[in-house]
Length: 89
Image 1 (cartoon, helix red, strand yellow):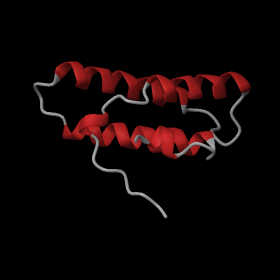
Image 2 (cartoon, one colour; image 1 turned 180 degrees about the vertical axis):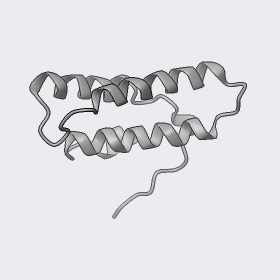
Image 3 (cartoon, rainbow, N blue to C red; image 1 turned 135 degrees about the horizontal axis):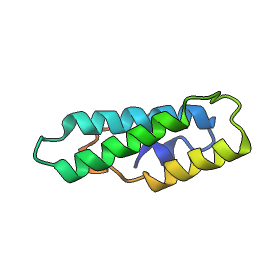
């Protein structure tokens, strides 16, 4: 399960930051020959950084929609290379 599912109900900004950290960790785990996956994760992270430049605590409706779409679009990206996510009880 990705942080996209685990963070449902939390503030959108926190969800984005959790998912980008997860993708950054997955990218670090990739071998240099896995270029397709590397490129896909790098592009997703670049898009995330563009979306998270504003006020994440109070995003406009348009930005909130784009953030939610980004989270769903990249829900499974890098999942097989991500380190296990710490589970809170």
